[in-house]
Every structure is written in C-alpha cells, then in structure tokens.
Image: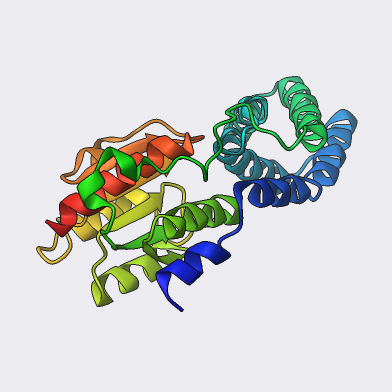
Length: 256
C-alpha cells in the first residue's frame, strides 16, 4: 500500500475524538467503585496505583482531544493518588479528586463533536511553512502505549506523507530503530518495560543512533536526560499542529 492510500485511509480527527469519548465509558465505572470504597474506608494500594496510571493517561490525552478540563481533573487525581501511595493519611482529597474527574469525564461524553479550535487538524497542513519540503517522505517510529494518542499521531503523520511504524514499548522500539534507522522517533516518557530516559540514553551512546532526532512526550516535567543532542521535550496535552511542525522540521533536518 502506498503512502497516499495510507493517508486517505487514516481516520479523521472527529472519528478519533469520538472513539476517545467512547473509551471513556470503560473508565467511569471503576472510578465510581473506587470512590465508594474510599467512603467505606477500605481500598487496596493496588487499586490506587491503577487509578494513578489511568489518571496519568487521561491528563496527557484529554487536552489533546479538546477536553482541557479533563486533563486538569486527571492531573489532580494523579497527584492525589500519588500522595496516598507515599503515605498521606488524608484520603478525602483523593475522594474529591475522583468526584471532579468523574464529572469531567461525563462532561466530555456530553460535549458536542466540534472542537474549541475550529480550524481543525486536517484542514491546515503546516508543511506550507516549508514549501521546498513538501515532497519529503520520511520514516517515523512512534513509541506510545496509549492507543488514543498513538492513533492520532499515526493519522496525522501518514496524512503528511510519512511512513509510520508503531512500537508499544522501548524494547520493541530499539529493535525497530536498529534494524532501520528512522528520520525521527516520537517517544512517550512513561513506557512499559523501558522508560523513555533509558531509551534516550541507549540510543545516544552509539554512533549509529545518536543523531536520530527524538521527540519525548509527557505530562510530567522535563528531566536532564531530555537535554541530549537532537532531543526535544514536548508537554502533553499537546496542540497537534504545533507538534506536527516540530516533527516536520526535525525529520527533514535529519534527512540532510
């Protein structure tokens, strides 16, 4: 299948956003159960850890799909869960954060399909900023375990003519990058099996891979490892057009 065919088959932002909202249905029941358990005073640390991981994903993805209040509520719930896990005796803050997160999810489910940024993600292709680069076709490896963010990045990049390869963890990403070095790698910071920091250090220590541009995505603050050469740290939730501009520039630069 050619790049044009792949781009035409990529789902629209509206469809990806609708799929994201539909997936929120699976989150709400567990939040209600956890809130009830907190009120009864009996919650296992394992369930609070699961909440922290779920809230972390929502804090990074909500705003990307136009639900900025969902990102804010999820970040608060993630922080409250973290405090309880490290020994805070006050679980009422976590209960209140759960109420806010549940309300934000319900609000997102009732939200109209239109996005606050009406220009849309497919209408304006930022490659017009670099007219001489329109015909550039590069390969990008995306390392992202959140299916909603992964689908969005895949759709955006294939529409812009890139060949995109997906990896769900750092180990798979290293194998893919070594077998066929890409023009750019996009890495989520919070990965299974290998954290993004370890992936960055692994790639930067070898001559064959150290110059491959990396974009590290996270809702967490940047760390010192993200100052490595040819590495850009970009916060979640992200503006898609802004991120695409960064990707186009870095991928073209690596192609020489």
